[in-house]
Length: 132
Ligand code: NI
Image 1: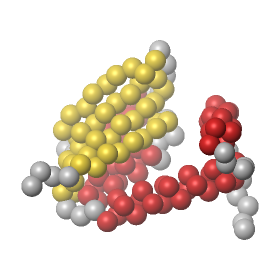
Image 2: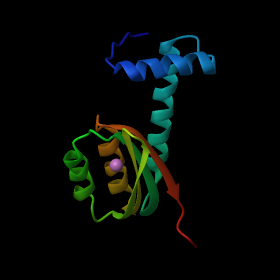
Image 3: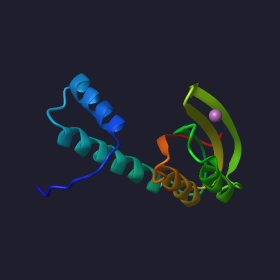
């Protein structure tokens, strides 16, 4: 099995260690392998989508984040985002819920842009069916 070294923020490592104990994983490697499998499965599900998609995307980021960069992404995909809600998780973290509607491939691209943004700590996607 190849060995890969990664760098992660201290706080994230602490959270990882907590999850490890709580959920009974034998090692960091095991929990990271599982997270990667989940990520790949999620991508496969998204890839299966075609045509118009409606979804909510929830993100959490630190308040000190330079908001302008975040907004760049939101402006870049402005046509997809029909509304969004801003709330405060606590004194240092903001949460936003975006309602998006558009071509599956474009939604996928937006999700990738958010997930690959190091300033965003969490991205949760809920895909919703179109009413028939
Ligand atoms: Ni805020």
